[in-house]
Amino acid sequence: MKIIALLPVKNESWILPTYLSSMKKIADEIIAIDDGSTDNSKQILCDAGAFVYENKEKLKSGWPEYSIRQNLLKLGREHGGTHFICLDADEVLSANFLKNGKDIIKKLRPGQKISMQWIYLWKNHLQYLDDKRSLFKDNFKDFIFFDKPGMQHEYNFMHVGRTPGENKQENIIKINNNQGVCLHFTSVNWKNLMLKQAWVRCSDLIEKQESYAKINNRYYNPAEKKQFHLSDTPAEWLEGIDLPKNVEKLPLDWHLPALLKFFDLYGIEFFEPLEIWDIKELENEFIKRTGRKPKSSKLHIYLQPIIKIKRKINKIFSI
Image 1 (cartoon, helix red, strand yellow):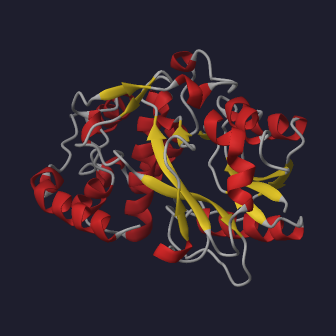
Image 2: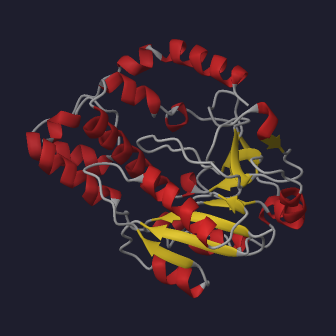
């Protein structure tokens, strides 16, 4: 058994020490594909002994997630991996999983996957989103798998499945929170998360030419608008993990200049119906370029009751 962590990365120096403090305790190797980082992400990974490759494919919008994940899988196989862990840089396997994780992974059969709860830490590492109104309540995701010939990722423009191959009842091993969870730190870096969400919405509009309502619905997050219930993060999830510090002082990431470039190329009013203008930097940019405040479409809010029913039905029939 050889466990390899497969990591797509771009400008994640703020969280890589946290990722590495967890992953190095369970993975035999870490293989990363860097998508043009301008910070010291690559150096941090190399210093930690990771194998770092450069992404050579570029898109007019979004990021080439499908090809990156496929290439990571190819590289992992070339490095002799049998079992793979597919986390992003802002995700961490909890400390309680690290204690017995190898034994759990060892019991997998070829093609089987480990699914664990995806915990959204909320604006700091001490609390997480734990509200039945949230899409992230009791949200399980497959992050680890035992490789099997023929397993490949299914194509999608961004939002590619973490593990390759189909997810079926017979090949998903769902573990409970006492055995381990995946801690998601993305919401800890709140301002950059909001810019990232805006960038993703704009990328989808450019690439897919979908309706504004459909895109706004896809990324609609009522937790941005309401006070949701939070629970304290159990100490046994964080023990021994190098937690990020001074996150509130982090500079704005690459998403802001990327958004400004979109505005230059397509005109800022092209994006006006998207729900992105509550970000002050973007609203100010719109006012500077047009002389007025933006008016985003609110149609997706009126469609939310239908969307919620659809999501509940999907959740019932999902694994």
